[in-house]
Amino acid sequence: WYADDKNEGWLSETEYKTLKNSMLKSVYENGGFYVGRYEAGIDTTTGTNRTSNTDKNSDGKYTMPSTVPVTKADAYPYTYVTRTQAQNLASKVNAGTKTSSLMFGLQWDLVLAFMHNKGNIADSTLTSNSTTMGNYKVNLWTIKNANAKYSTDYGSTFTACPNPFKKESYSSILLTTGADSSFSVQNIYDIAGNVYEWTLEKTDRGSLPCAQRGGDFYDTGSGSPAAKRNNFYTFSTNYSIGFRVTLW
Image 1 (cartoon, helix red, strand yellow):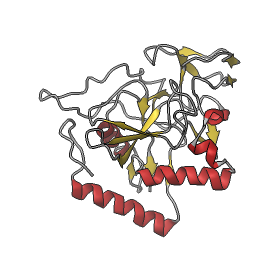
Image 2 (cartoon, one colour):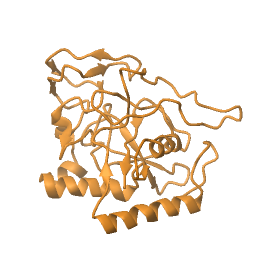
Image 3 (cartoon, rainbow, N blue to C red):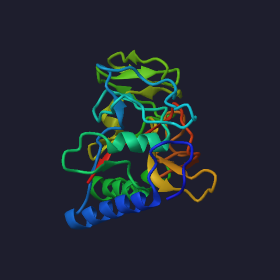
Image 4 (spheres, rainbow, N blue to C red):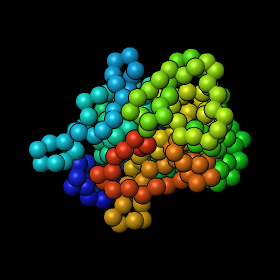
């Protein structure tokens, strides 16, 4: 845990420890946890993609955005959120009797272990070069999903993908969630590439305490594999950072 004076609604140290202990207890008793099949998104049928973060009070602190996130294919990636905003959004989804949250760093690592153990994905693919499993600028993919959309201007506008949509040269293209089965491992999409994802992990960088994982569409699979940790400020927010919901 660490202090955050740039956002409203960040967990107190006690609340953070309680949440983490709740997750650990549930994993121990139930043998695991649930994770969103897709990156958190904005439903294309009810909302528009975010192109900035203006969710601030008069005191300058970030508040929670009003758009409710969805976990479904073909949604706009929910970007332009701080780590605390992402946690507030994740914690308020309709989870029934479950607790919803961002993933702790331990959970992210367990997802990768699950992919390795159950999906026979090589450690090197997860930790060194994830090009073959994610939307990176050097992944020359072919998308046959008629509902997918793409953006070449960092998410400012999205266009329906032609069918098929074949990328034949290195380029940075942001895609809607779950755009193609080639980005899926054990039925979990975009754990590598497309957008980085906020976690509740604390980095070892004092002024950059927020950890994001998994790489984005502007990176290479070798420079930002699935296991990659990036360090950011509590007020960091841009086009390439989203999040994913977990339940326990």
